[in-house]
Image 1 (spheres, helix red, strand yellow):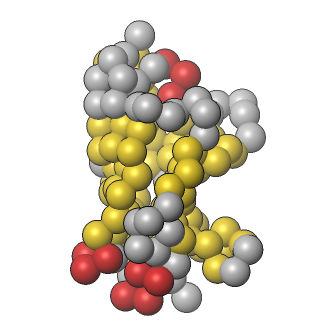
Image 2 (cartoon, rainbow, N blue to C red; image 1 turned 45 degrees about the horizontal axis):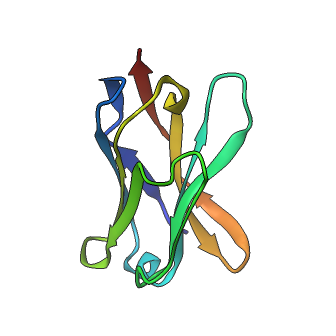
Amino acid sequence: QVQLVESGGGLVQAGGSVRLSCAASRRTSSVYTMGWFRRAPGKEREFVTSITWDGSSKNYADSVKGRFTISRDNAKNTVYLQMNSLKAADTAVYYCSLLEGSTWRYWGQGTQVTVSS
């Protein structure tokens, strides 16, 4: 079992930046691909970005490419999401997740990011 805890959300103005963190409870999380998802009000949860265990490969949704950056520090069992040039459309609850096999199996409780225009 792995517990994931997100932090760093809040209220930010359009064009601003925020960095989210996701701390994992187990050191073995460092060997797994980690990802960020989000759910905007009235919408389905959507994929935002992912990073392989060693950081060698990262994927981004088209809507965030060039603005968001995922990174990880395996020594701290933590994954980060740097979000720049934020837009009102980025307002959502952001969740981190751990990929086990082909399944996003473990999820955090989410952290709210609200972008005011």
